Amino acid sequence: DENFPNMSIEKLVEYKTTQVTGFPDNSKSPEYYIKRYFVETEYKDWYDSQFTNDSIQNMLGISNLDVSEILTDMGYEKGRSEKYEEALVLLNLAIEYAPENPDAHTKKGFTLGYLLEDEKAIISFNQALKIDPNYVNATFGLGDSNYFLGNFVEAKQYYEMGLELNPKDEYGLSFLGLTLSAMNDENALKYIEQSLEINPENADLIYNKAIALNNLKKYEEAIQNLNRVIEKNPNDVDALDFKNEILKDSGILKEQRLSSSFPQTVDSRCDLVYL
Image 1 (cartoon, rainbow, N blue to C red):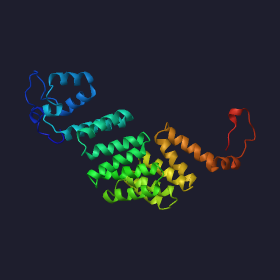
Image 2: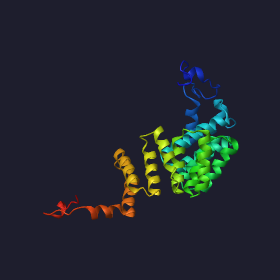
Image 3: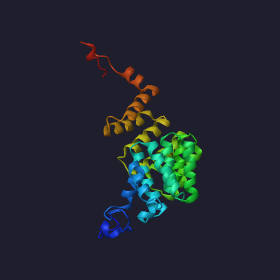
Image 4: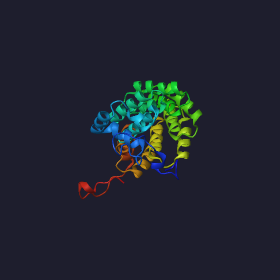
């Protein structure tokens, strides 16, 4: 609808005639059939039994790259639902259909990262960059994987390369700041703030700022930012746990207790409050 606002799907898609009446249906997109073919085992078996010498993409008049792009989108949606193993299956299929698809390799890399397979993720990101040296998401992906592996010098280099290609990428800026904070570089906060200028209410970016401030031993400011995250989502377990960890490890909690005054009268244990 966005690309062809004045044309119906029936006019846009004209499949070839087959021996099966009503199949394919011109009112349905190629994506509809590809999704069914790769998700529904019974549908795939039916198609293969009816069209033994004709692939699904040839039947629909689309290329292997078209199939790969659809499978890549399907894998991405599985990843967004935190079904990473299922996402990986679809992304591997996408690469089988079109090894030249950099997006499939890149999304596979990010999926492997979520599965804590950062060494394998680096291989996927590098494969994407062999296909397209300027594929910015793969460059940022190499930054992410090296960051989580603790390779901060390499991570810094890849984030800087990515920002040369896309200077306004808020996550690239934020993670460059995180990386610098892990290296105890005060310039970290400059990049963190730039990311928040682009997207000031993004909870992920605010959380990253808290991490950076904690790395730089600015504990009270870190807690202030975690409180902002918690205000947005009171059930954010990561933010709540991180806040408690900072309070415990930084000594702030002990200082608060020592500086507080004890109530003169305590009627019950429930009434004991530090002022």
